[in-house]
Each structure stands twice: as C-alpha cells, then as structure tokens.
Image (tube, rainbow, N blue to C red; front, top):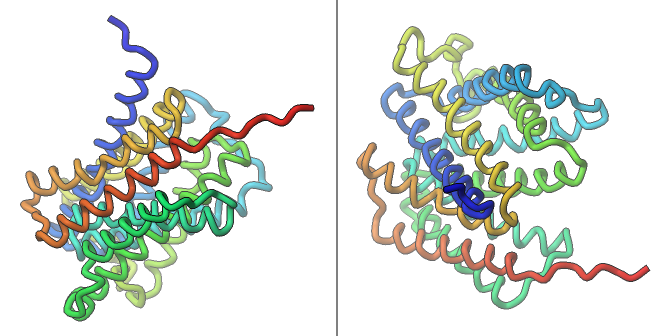
Length: 316
C-alpha cells in the first residue's frame, strides 16, 4: 500500500534527524581514538562533502553546478559562517562529548528567534518569549556556563559550545536569504561547503595558533595510512551530511517547513541514545535538566511558528 504524501514527508524528516544525529558520533570517534585535531577534521569533512556532491550532480543534474557570478560573494560569506559552525562544533564535540555538543547547537533556535524579532520584524509574544527563556536557561545548565569551575577546567569547551549555537544561528539566517535569492538548496550546499573547506584549510595554516588546528602542514594528513580512520572520515562527510540534508530537502517538499523542523529537532535525542550505546556517554542530572528545558523551549518556539497565521493577501 502506497504511503500518503504526509507520511512520506514525516518519514523523510525522521530519516534526516537520524542521519544528522550520527555526525557528532563520527567526530567523537575520530578525536578520541585518533586524537585528530578538530579543525583538521572539520576541513576534511567539507572536502569529502564536496567530493561526494560533485559526481552526483554530474550524473543526475549538471545544472546544479552552475551559479551566477553575482551570487559568489554571498555564498563565500555563507561558507565562512558554515566554516565557523563546523569548526566550533568539532571542537565542542572533542571537549564536551557528542550528546552535549549536539544539544547545545539547539540554543541557536532561541538566538534565531531573538534576531528574527530584532532585525526581521518577526513577532515575539509572551509564549515565545517564555520559550526563549527556557532555551537559554537549558543552554546555561548544559554547558556549565553558570559553574565557575567549568570555565576553569573546560573553558574551550564552554566557549566552543556557545559559539556553535551562535554560528548556526548565522548559518540559518543566511539559509533564509539564500532561499529568497532563488538558489537551489543543493547548489547552495555544494558552494558553501567548498568555501568553508577553503576557509578551514587556511585556518589550519596558522601554525597551531588557532585551537584545534594543524601545527605543521603534515598534520593535515593526520590519519596517515589508517584504513579505519579514513573510512570513518569518508563516512562522516558522505553519509550524515549528504543524507541528512537530502532527506531534509525531501521533507520540505512534502511538509510545512515548521512541521519538518519540529521532527528534525529529535536529532539531540537520537544522538544521546547513540552516544550512550556506542561511546558510553551519559549526561549529569544537571545536564539532563538543561536538555529537558532547552528541548521544551525549542518545541514551543517551533509550535509558535507553526501556529503563526499566514499573511492575508491584499486586494488589488
């Protein structure tokens, strides 16, 4: 029996959440078992995403490779935002663990709501304001930002985790602008990952000045001749990113964007389960409370967006 259009959309969104939830598991495996510098890892991830997308586009739709030159500066800035997000997230996973790092990304939902209200004229009622407070309180508890000892023992992890959310907020807002410009999501994905790869490569040429970067050019080939290491690295670039974005784009074609976003927000839950099963990670009671507050706030913000009335068309 054929699935309905909405059932296909729900399945695609759920598959997207599952694929995306494995990203930090792969990253954690590489930084723990191979001691791989996070920014070197992030650079290779971007390179592999591009190397995966280009052959598929050549085979199935070459038009996706084309972009107007006037769009390149915008995509370069977008790529810089993505480079920041990928870099800080890799550092956060290395310092905080897969589960905590993934949950902290969702602090971006609160930041996006605040910036959307401040700069895009979006509504911010009492319900949504309360949800933002929940998100920010949850984020503070998860990161340990309220604990002075955390700033002393894990300064890099706390800062990277908080900056991950901010970078993802910028990435999300740039994504909206890209859609308004009429650029294909797949074309955008290709070019921003290509630009991000260039920026991360340059970051790794600073001689180790940036935390988590290569100290010498030789460090760019940190995995050496390790078959296991390169297999995990290739899987990280090819599966979670391309699969996650691919299923997400399918879900957007079948569902309302707010509905798809709510389903994809299950990602931290899947990551926590996988991190426990595969990596033995557990959250402290305080982090569990913070996660509950943050994800409740995320769901409330997304439900508020879902309930937002559509604009009434003006009569001619």
